[in-house]
Image (cartoon, rainbow, N blue to C red):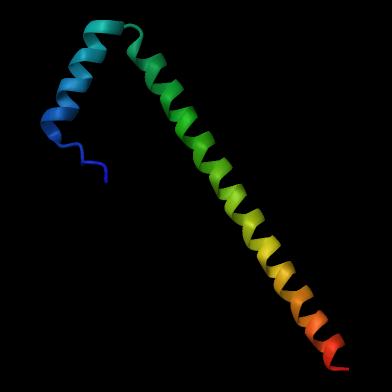
Length: 71
């Protein structure tokens, strides 16, 4: 189980980022992180939709096979 990040930890991370990258690079870094997170969310959503579609199709095929066996 991962621990939650609180306010002190978040402030420390932001200060370290400011020191390491400087104030000029932080907006670009923020944009890159935001794009990465949104791409990850979109990809995971697509994977979940594909899995749901496959499960639905498999369930339909299973019921068709069960009907054919009963006949």
